[in-house]
Length: 115
Image (cartoon, rainbow, N blue to C red; front, side):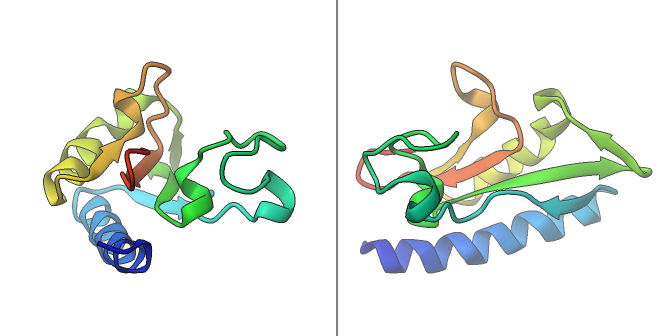
């Protein structure tokens, strides 16, 4: 699958995730989706707070800010139900709550071995 095909699939699945969040009684705002190389460096280059191989740089990741009853939920544990749903959508879907340093608001797809 080309990067472009995967980006379009990711966008569609991210929309499904957001709809699922609302159906479960959550609200969301959007965090980082695309990280511009002028600010964060090209793929393989660390610049600013972004990692060198961030999937955000390839438009294959999004960070969601999660709310319930107007309360901002900041823990990875709060994202766990959405993480489980996200991973069920496609074999390439990865949830940041599973990372060695948990990043629960991060939802991405692997591409060429990168999550």
